[in-house]
Length: 258
Ligand code: PGA
Image (cartoon, rainbow, N blue to C red; front, side, top):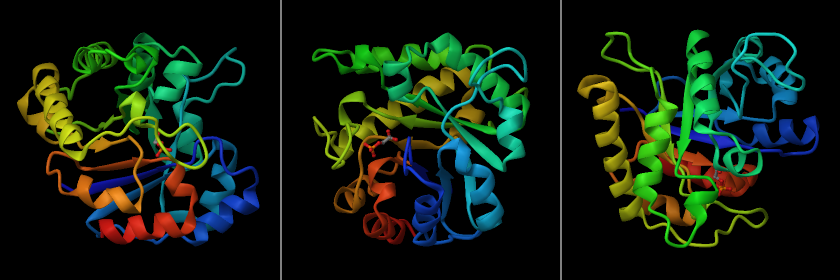
């Protein structure tokens, strides 16, 4: 399976010129490499970046709304994002679950809307306020997020299903600069969780479609710890936040992946 490296810039950088400068430091993996690089900048920069860098990169969005148009102030539809060149849309990120009270029901509607436009959702699980509690039962939380998030979502008989799951343990995501986390997630535990997620997916989506779903690690990674996560065969890539804004760090990570 091809590996994914998803650069989630979050609400950074603060200008288009900085965004362009950052992208100049990214390598273009091309379409035939072992790794697919998906760049998710703030949506306002997408049209300019896609115009300048075009097909060098695969574009992703960090969020969307579930309706195609209407009185939904501040929201962007999947079709609008598609118009900007987007192919992937992150949904259910832990920060949105926590700061914007994004519920599994909302996430489910977004996933279906993304699919209707033939885009690929990147569903994040393992985040949210509950998951941050000291004695949180993370497996139970993830199982529930998958069941509710993927309700009535199916491959419609096809053996392949266009979705990526990001295992994103709430306690292992950096809270800002520098990209250090509160607690450490071990590669072996992340691998174990990816296997658990695939088991749930098999039950929900059927064996064949579930096998084709990439499961990536969305806790904090950098050039120093990426190597050990890469050894986990059940992980099919990474969702990288803070380190994707650091030219040197991300360049090392890109090298590690190809
Ligand atoms: P981080 O974020 O790499 O800054 O911890 C990961 C993510 O939330 O996408």
